[in-house]
Image (cartoon, rainbow, N blue to C red; front, side, top):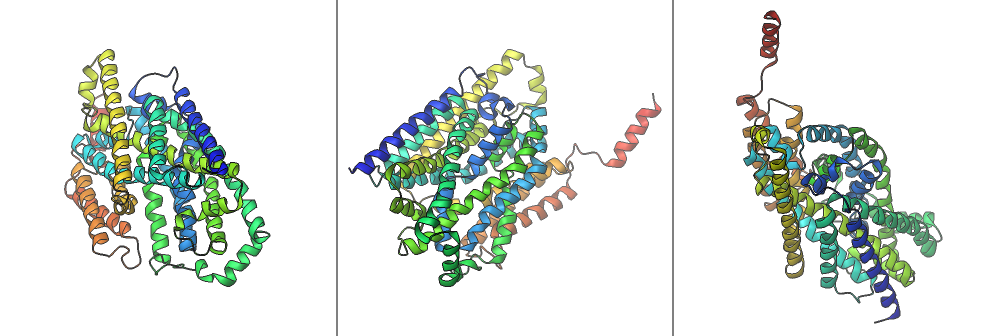
Length: 506
């Protein structure tokens, strides 16, 4: 093992121990309840919400895929900043709604919201299962992403599989003990390193290789102009229609992403979420740096075999081992933080909705004593923790034995979760919407999405197939709701008549 590899491994080891220590320490003295474990007792302030939700948007893909897409395709990668920023604009409006609804009814997950809104545990289970199917690939990709980062930053000394196991152990160590609060505290370490690493690379890479950013851009315009226009340097898939439709689709979907829901529900107030939505879009500008490094790699390492390693190939080529290790740690934590929140979100949905009996209905809850409610909550928390562990093990095993098995599914993750939007979000704005409409729309949208993908029609007419599926979903929801509205819904005329009758009898 070279001296550079030894230095990198030592720094990485210290960072992982610090991560576990910070994550576990954050949970000391906290209440041992499902509410505390899953949404931090709704006690996270503006700073921690900002760090937590930034941690979910700046993942290992930011270090690997962003630079890789920039290297391979060019300008289409700007969709990433576009949809994250659009999603935060939408979150400014819907985040407070989710927080208010969940806080009022003591809900802790996406499936909780669906179950309470429709009084249907069956529909909530369907949402939990579909969300799990589309989130597990993200967990696997974070594990594999960390493996690639750690293998690169250690100069090959740490094997991909060893790095994957380390990421699993570190994430599970603090998430099982401290829950969402642990992820928020680890995000503080992660985001500090990310900002330092990205700020340094933004200045260093252009100066080191091109004598500044302007010469790099001039060279890009002259020699690689195709990278600056749609559909980029690819085969024509990522055109302007795909770009716009993907921003719309992903911008809406991220607002109901189970991890986003966890962020909403953990805030101290609705205003905390509004302030977060104002500030966090600026954080997305950091993504321009990996994009720039990916472009620089076109000239520094023109024959790179794995485009996802564009950023770390440049870093290793130009920096000493200690700095390589620090940037590598930032990349590793960018995998661990979102991975932990993904596992927690799945655990919360299954621990209460699928395995824990659900919300048990208002009448059952009303007749239970305080001790009985606490015991039920502890049981559901324990189930959630077990599911969190099991899901992590499944993703780890898949990443070790079948690293490509879920890649196809991960492509559909955002398109699949988009089908939950009517049931989880539209339903809160439209009291007339029925559970039959939500279920029918969810099924039709999911089938349409899968059919378009596997028949080679995604994108269709240049438009992201997921958006076509959402359109079909919404049409079914509207038609079924108009034909069979929610039985609890009362038309405005009848409400007014009932109100007048009550007034006249006073």
